[in-house]
Length: 143
Image (cartoon, rainbow, N blue to C red; front, side, top):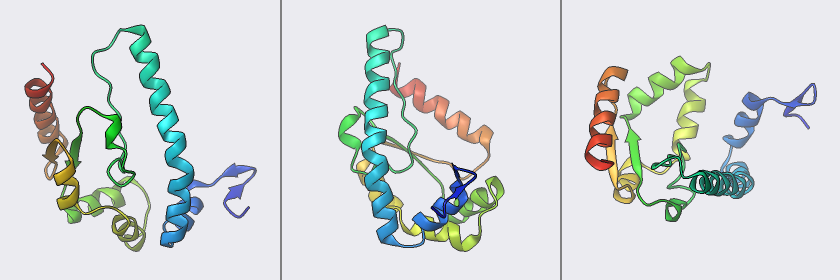
């Protein structure tokens, strides 16, 4: 009940609770991932039925942690060094350094993700550089 404000979920409070300890984190993942799987499956089936697209992309940060890679033909890991990720997270939202580090600690380390991913793009520079790398990846692997 304490995550609700005016009968709506306050996602900042929810995040604080989820990332406060490993048990809460596992409980939330156990609730979310089956639902996310259904959403992805339904979206994929809908696109496949319409036959309008040749590519289906799922942007999900914890695909490897959820052991969800079996659904995909290929996976692309987009990563950056931890200092840059922390800087970007603090700029994007008003999240404390402690909270960000706590979230990172719940994730699989990059070296393990790299072993599981089919492709990796390291995004340590600006958006223009990232788009250039993504375009290159797209043109090399999808056409």
